[in-house]
Length: 273
Image (cartoon, rainbow, N blue to C red):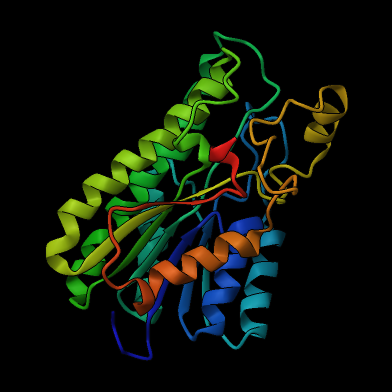
């Protein structure tokens, strides 16, 4: 791993939740952050997404941690937008050696089995968005020439099928998160020759605005078993963003210098149930 004091990370979905947690933690380690988020809702997704104010708050928290940050509004579904956002940060900080592909959406409670719109939006964000993130950053990591680490944030729904209800939304989520594992393994093989490690992290339900919102509150009130993440072995309904961040920090640092092509659960025993 690069010993330079000027390590540079790209984080997607950085405006709040897990992405914000990762950004602040990396800032504490002296890593410059290029923080990217769509900062707008998607019509088919039944809860509010992050805003530009959220992204500005992430920037303030990174600076409070002593870090440097460049924010950019871009949709991970659009490779051109994403490349421009990454390039704007690289122009300020230099080439990238850490990538955290975190942006994602879910459509729990949407029961239509034929909803092509929600299927497309979930797969395009969760799978194409991760591929776009890899495509936008890998050449910069190779050009830097010091190796590095990509961490692709998947889900336990990328390793198991429990929670499927036949809806387009749950099929799209499980398929997209499984697809991230395929991207991870293929990228690990492709970039190993450059010293770039690629791993995925698979949380159970995480206590973020993706879960803590009015839509989900109504869903859980009507059906306490509605969450595909219910049934953790440990007695916690959700883990915290910092729990995922701790796994990310392990993977991007020298403590995991020979770890690549690995799917790492942070699941409170969900897979054991």
